[in-house]
Image 1 (cartoon, one colour):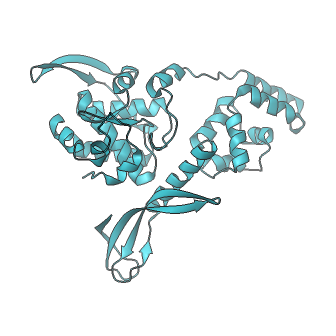
Image 2: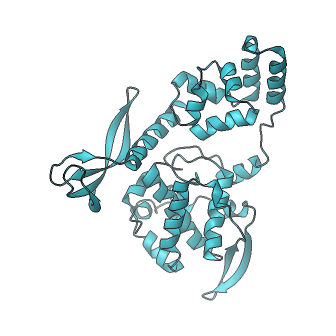
Image 3: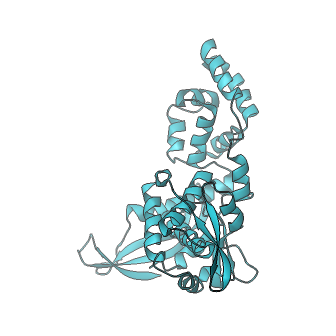
Length: 331
């Protein structure tokens, strides 16, 4: 797919067109099919990319590799260290990594397959205690006892674990959840963001705002915001079990109102915390809100019914892969 854009060619200062397509790329001797975007100079035919376009390619490429090989994502790697209350030096000694290696993994560097599997195993507290015992010689007695108590005292099921199970229902990171993190706080605040900014909203419209925000973010950055899956139903794309999702988010109230001679549930919320989102995520949320807020519920339903993401998957209420984000027109 090609489109003309306002950006100028770095080669001639002339016009360029943006190309969006699918290509095979190799990573660690494996082939992966990924979506790519790049610019082509009309005068020279030379191809060039922006940082954002490169980020999209590598995010999708690395996400597929992580999922295929059971390697945790950067935020999950950070959560392991924080969960046990360890600093970089301590967890590096326990796992036997090189200096600064763990910090680099948290920043997005791809672990080797063996290190990735070790990180996954480290999520198990008993295994972590076993690794600590094996690395006892790396610590003096006082620090060893301190680290041992920190790991031993770790609560492996956080307070929101039940809430997480109810919202995500066994979802795993894949193309069907946009390789997004299963983060209760983000899905909660994303939902309340649209409810607050709308001044109250019906689920039908909220579902579309969630859908367009997640799929737009995937199109731009190779990862969803909420980590939710979506399916195509009669009224357009919606989060899977969206009623259960909204029921299990704190700070949302419901009111039964009569609209078009029918009783409907209107959702309201008094506050949202946008600081949990990155600047890229905040921009996506605000961009989608600016487009959809002025639209009526019927208008946004009609728009969603023109999307391949709904047309190709409506039979049988199928899950919509995030790869369909590249066919969606967001403006």
